[in-house]
Amino acid sequence: MIINVAKMNALENPELPPKSDVAQRERSAESLLAAMFERAGWDVQHPPPREGFQPDLLVRRRGIAYAVEVKAGPEGRSDRLVPLFAQAVLQSARAAAQKAAPLAVVAAQYMFREVMRTYFKEYCSNERLVQRTHQLVDQAKTDGMPEELLPLFATKMDEHLRDYQSVFDWAKERFFLQDLCPEHSARFKVSLAECLNSLLKKS
Image (tube, rainbow, N blue to C red):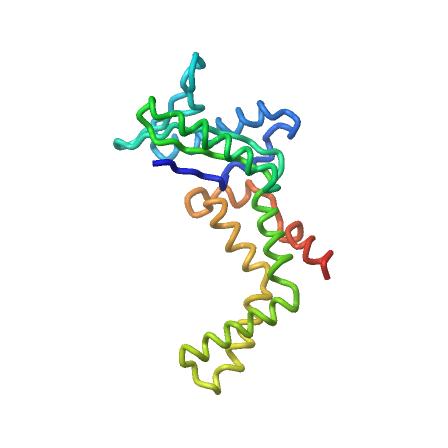
């Protein structure tokens, strides 16, 4: 079985080297990922370089083992990430001799920011928000909500969809695993204002 992880939820680190130094970025990402596994109780090994394929990390816990291949992308653009991810998948898949399941990991410093920018741009224009509110009201009507409650429901849904801060906080908490690592809340500095740039430009 191949397990592919493209979302690098805890490696958006301001201490990662500049994007021109790809090798150093990957070493830094590898160290951060190893630390995360160790903190979660996994046994982490760094296989020494030798002839033939060697994964970046071998991690084991309770009879489960993964051969991990780490790639670091300097940007969150899909056209840059997809080739890196494909390379990580192919290299990790060669880990069968290690008696471990392949695990491909791609770290991209700006991935969360780009995901949120795309969300706000594509789904939060005034036209799209009105459309989404109508869809929710239609669904509530289909589900049997009384007619007299639909106007209030529409108002509440419109307010909810336009509460960008709540949407941002909800997504950031889950993307950076803040329930498991509360320190990530202060560690990752991406802000709502940065993510709203695309929406403001569009409007």
